[in-house]
Image (cartoon, rainbow, N blue to C red; front, side, top):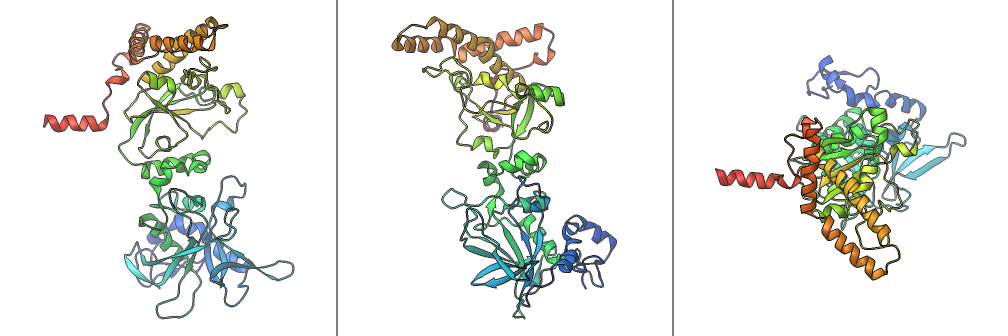
Length: 453
């Protein structure tokens, strides 16, 4: 037998699964993480579920997976018996009580009652860069990737958990891996643990077209929201690997619970890749008041809340700083009121400039203070003054108010005074803070360097 890692001869089989071989302890350790995922499961499965019919073939199944189930097996691949039936691959099981055969379509789902299928074949071992005798087949829905800008299947979380995000393509919907006919044979063979390792290596490098979807596309389209909420470390890893570069500096505005439970500052500097969902979510529009001051800011909730398992009062997770950014400046009946949406603004929020220029915590703090301490009190006073006026009088007065009080010039004046007050109060971190209008974006900086050269 040959070593699964280095292809050396005279390798010894794994004593547990007897389905893969290694020539040395070093090679075995190199494959330890991937092999350990299913090593003990293989003999346990064969002992508990013997081959139900002679023509059944052993395969590895990646269910779509979900974090919404308490069953941890939903996020781990499993062995199954499969059978070709009517041009479909069916899962074959025996009823534990009656012994009757049960066949189910592995690709069927709630929104895919009659799924059509696609098979993608893998002919090479990507780690050894050589052909394999039995090609591997990846069986999936053929509508599981982007068609006309839409997705009909969700990302396969089970595979993402298995690869820990180390995959070039984002595969959608349930996936079945089986061993194909040998070029010199006429029948399928049972899948092995070596096949499993070959498939994992394939996922690391494959980035072709037509099958699967490039990871960056899904990051942009907010399709990894479930992972972002329930496995933030995996989501951060995906952003680091596939979010693109250069990164844009932004700010997270925390809530009271963040300060109490985690000791966080109110405004935290963060770096955001260009493929982050905040730039491509059609539901996110710059806060209106930031557009009027010519500093349009995109604001998006950070869905992972590390304190969510603890007892937190609703008031503690509210975010009045973000609410202040959404003071209604539209000339309508809610004019001058803070956020008026159906969903309350709670938890932590990410703030990024729409033009993708960098922004600092101090600059965001100044924008929030301008809205919260300068504009909102004045608008509240103006609302009271306009009680009893006609609709037309109110509309005209509000337009004049916005023209006189909410503009780039007014914010620049406020920023200068706000910075001066901070420095005088002894906060030296404000000493060298520049106006957000003085920030150059990366393209402008590179262009200037070329001119200088």
